[in-house]
Length: 322
Image (cartoon, rainbow, N blue to C red; front, side, top):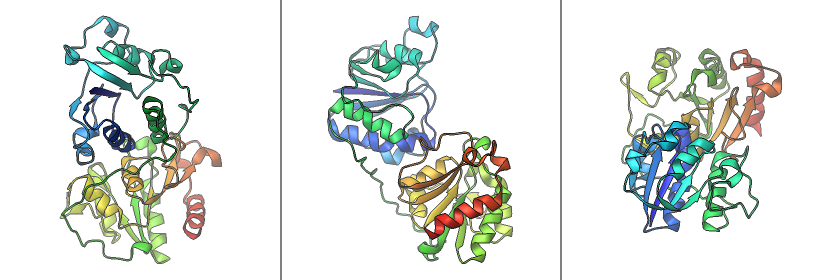
């Protein structure tokens, strides 16, 4: 059996939300050859590869499946002479779905235009709009496989051989802060996070800053304030892979963060996050039971820059004591 799974684009957070889905497909169809394809790029090919290497047989990026009428009459060069028993469309843009459906196949799944192009119909009346993304994927799987996925299975995480004793404080008192995100419009001001970090240290917590390569500009400020950045060694970002990142995450009790990829790493490592939202939907991008969210619009603010430390601190105090 040959299965093709299509997604438009995957950054780390997008990819992590799909890992349990990918792993379960391989569980249902253990002998299937599974191809994963994107219009742009996928984090499955680099950062998240250790989580899917035993579940995906082939990755095709830049596949020319776009929301374009012209593409409907163009051949799909990367899929010439290929045939799939099942194509699973994970997105909802109609023109992309129509372009995807041109690839030779036996059965096609898509929620686009309320299942209009799909060989599978929503006979279970499951929800596919405005819901948590991982739940959406398992509703897709419920329709395709006819299985019940009322409980989403945990992702299987490999072991890391790298041991780092840089975090040796009491986990119950450890709080991480991740001030970055894929887009700066989703970021609360770093200096406000720094103010919160000093406040938490004053009341007895050990605070660690988790900075990605794009947050190097904050490294010196963290060090000058005597905060450890576990992913940085001698001024260099120590990228030992996703399993190492999750190993570090498990040494935290909580993570304070924006709507970014680091938050997903922690949530899928089983760590609760305290996540602030301004321009994205907290219902879709916060893992249920693993994230306390602040939607600034609920408090009358229009941009993250406007949200005050005093209000954040009050909500945080309530989170830490309940």
